[in-house]
Image 1 (cartoon, rainbow, N blue to C red):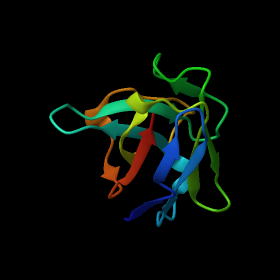
Image 2: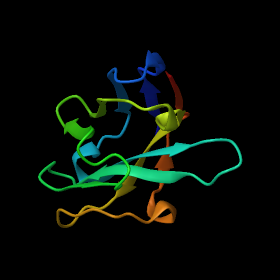
Image 3: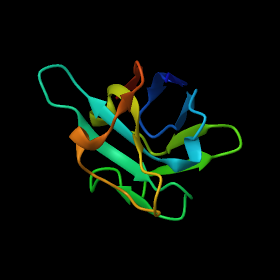
Length: 126
């Protein structure tokens, strides 16, 4: 299983960026997907999560109203659209997958995710 994140980069405050994560998982539509971020010296934190069907989403309070998580099960890809970016959004962003073949749900528990991507760095300048 591989999760390949891409789309990070440098953007000015107030700008937008979309990061993507393509998964080489045959059963992608049976996985809860999450985006996490981490800055040096801090723990990895959940930014957003999306259920298997895409009908349910979760956002951390710090990004609510600015970030949108979505998925395309035909393309085995999950996206994180980030708008109105702030310098405090600067971090390495990781996608993660949790195999969950029954139901349509979300988990906010970092340790529940089975697979992780390599991360893509997002830098927001002030």
